[in-house]
Length: 125
Image (cartoon, rainbow, N blue to C red; front, side, top):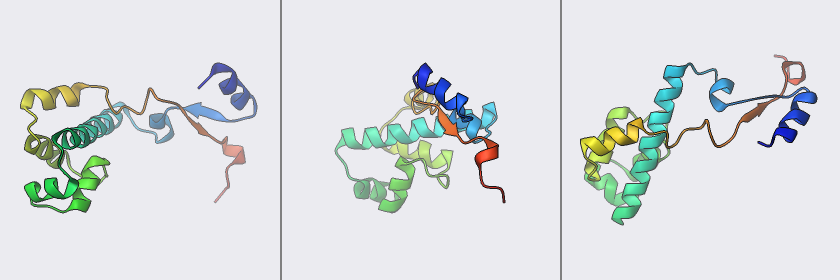
């Protein structure tokens, strides 16, 4: 976000921050979310590079197409085990999976900061 826009928003009473701040994630939770997002993005990328459909991958995983869609979108119901198994099924090595997990790819921190209304302007329940 441009600095002048951020200043205007803050002057109007808005609060800016990262997605992790908005969701009140601690550093461990943020790290786990980033790892999951990076692995899910790599599953989608490897599947596309391999030229196979979600349905084809689902058959290889003995799962469903909708489950593969959830894997690729890092759905909260998808376990790390399933992400790693899927990457391995797509040909990723242990070393490659380690690089994916250790990368910052998929990190919600850098692309932009989230904006929240100040508490005084939010509906009270």
